Length: 310
Image (cartoon, rainbow, N blue to C red):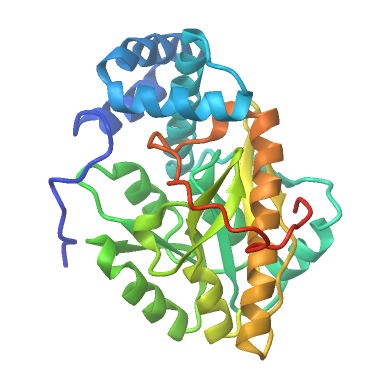
């Protein structure tokens, strides 16, 4: 059965863009292709004022100063590079994934290899859409929720290539997201989901991020307690041609008490955001939310515990 397509909601760019990029990637030598793509990206920046403004605001927050025009262009180029990595993955050219040598590495790898369902979180950072592919290397079947848009050929191709190992659960409207997520979890599947945009969370709480207290979706932790699932976040950061570093958070194990589980979830998520800030200050161009930063929340002293990065 054909999936319904929401034509009014689409990724930036023409409907034929992905097909064109896929053909160009196959036909052109890599240096020629990269030069052409980056020039095209630079030309597109003035044509996307809302995304350009969001990029500049984010870069100022993470850099501590107004960005130069060349830095905004570099941000757009990095996003295009991530798109090309997805298109290559869809035809079987996968980058090398390696888990960063951090204290929480072994706990994360044990969870990846474990024969139990889990919740893996990430955000619109780096090669987030490739996370499902990296987790599938551990023999897991990964379900990833995505909002259906009118030009999502990149994710459709990934799903086709990894048929059976990576499955996208298509959501037609944000309001359906929670219902679809519960259906997948009740079926006992492992879920990988992006947890930074408020439109996909029925529960939200305030956390410290990029110099302000901001609202973030918190639904994941309610579900983790309800279904007694461990939670871990990971960020896939490109570190060179064909090489992606997976930086994991600590693993949060389920707790029987709802109150204790949510308190632990708050501490855990603040640690995730602290870890993410560290990554973004080292790699500022891998933040791929070309939207305004999450809304600032009223300052409430002691409302969120302090947590260490990761």
